[in-house]
Image (cartoon, rainbow, N blue to C red; front, side):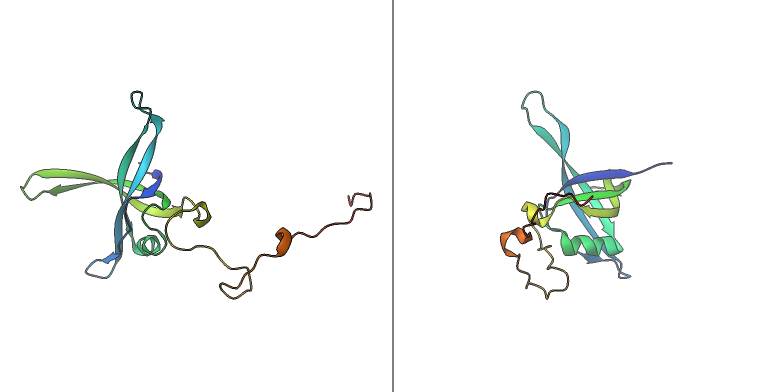
Length: 147
């Protein structure tokens, strides 16, 4: 049987890391995922809010690097949970259990969340300065191509 899901959307809130009684890391969050088509009457795209659960290192990764509004790509499986509400009624919930989580944007795109820019290789953190003139030097041409 095959049960694979890939979704891309924005986190609706900051994820919070929790631990089970035996210390396993877990977090749950929701992604706002736009549909590919527009509504005929309003001309707007509808949005689905999909619940996601991440465990262990994936949970720690999400809580460390993602925040509300950050674009995420989640790969996992669909899981349906049965539960009883406070009135004793049988209920069902669908959620994606995340296997892999990827960045769907970059900090340079103006996405909210932490600072993901890295200093230049070999320089102390925060000390990188871009060279003047875009970092390119003029090449003198002698009229012959090198190939």
